[in-house]
Every structure is written in structure tokens, then in C-alpha cells.
Length: 269
Image (cartoon, rainbow, N blue to C red; front, top):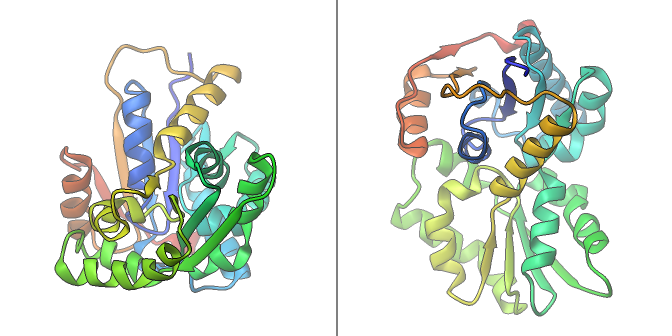
């Protein structure tokens, strides 16, 4: 049994969508979450900057004696996974592969849409990953949705303006006849209600949270790092921006109080 916590980082609140799935799958595991809201969004930043930020985030989590790091950010997963994996010296989980596999399993007509930050879309990681999961050809269409992260961070999850923006972003993909839409940013499940409404009933949304949690569980079992305690896990949160904003929005999304939340100076790492 290994009682050390699981470390999770994201550019802000979005990684809570992954954390929530991990908490549901592994309720006895302790976790430490860092949301880098003070430097968000990552999607508009260069690959070098995203890598620098990700390594700082990982160093902070390693200082907390975590046993695993989940990069709960698609942009960081696409830009910095190798750098974090090579430097961490422990299991590192990314979010691209699970989403790609889920999309390949969900599609029926092999017309798949991917929405994400500009950084994730420009990296082309999703089309490559999805095609590796499929036998035969597939049509994969991408759309950058840069405003979604700001809307999610502000808590505008179901505002009319959010629906209007979603409709504009999704229109080019819907015109292509997609039947599956990958939420290629961990912030986007926070907006899943308006995204689903804009996409319509014939389009399946792919949220990689549950598949990621499954991989986390398998990795902990395989490496002997699972916590076999029957006690509920403890969860501690850190942010590089407003603690009160994080507590308010984090509690609303997780459906439980975010009590232990602290602000840190991530630039020290």
C-alpha cells in the first residue's frame, strides 16, 4: 500500500474534470491539485513556454511527495509530456491518448470533430492519435475554441453568450457531418451542457475523464502504488491566482466543498 498522494496539474480549473473522475474511480486515494489560473490560458502560448510552465508545475508536485503526476491539460500533454516524463522519475499520465481511443470507439461514420485550444489543434496530436486507433481511413476535423477556457474560468458555464459562441465554433464541424466530438481541452466538460445543445442530439461528446481515471487505476495497480486504505481520500488544492474564485467554482463543479486551497508562487519552481 502506498499512501502518497496523486499529483494533478492543469492551466486552471479544467483539470478538475479529470480529478472528479479520478476521485470517483479511486475514492480512497489522496490527491494534490495545482491549477495555474494565474498564467492561463496555455493554448495561446509557445511550446517552449508551455514546457517551462509544465516543468515548474511538476517540480512543485514532486516537492509534495506525490507518487504519480497527471497532466490534466491537453495543451501541456501535447507539448510537454516527454519533458515531464523524463524529469519526474515516476509515472506520468497524459490526456490525449484516452480521448483518442474513446473517439475511435464512439464514431460510427468515421467523421470526428476535435475542439481544443490553438496549441492543441496546431500540434496535430489528436488526428494522429485517433488514426492510430482506427483501422482504415477517417475524416478528422479540428476547430480551435480559444474563448472557451476564459468562459470556463469565469464560471460562465451555461450563459446564453456561451451557447452563442459554441454554436459559432461548432458550425464548421457540423457542416462536415461529424457524429463524434472530442472535447480536446479539460476545461470544455465544464461547458458540456451548452456544447451538447449546440452540437445537437446526433453528435456524441467524448469526455476523456473516465478513461483517464481507468488508466490511472491500472497504472497504480501495476506499479504497486495503489492505496488500499478504506478511509476517504484527502484532497488539497493549490492555485496561482485567486483562492476565493477557485474555491467557489471548484466547489460548484465538484459538488463538494473545496476547503483546503492555497495560493502559491509557482515561479519559484
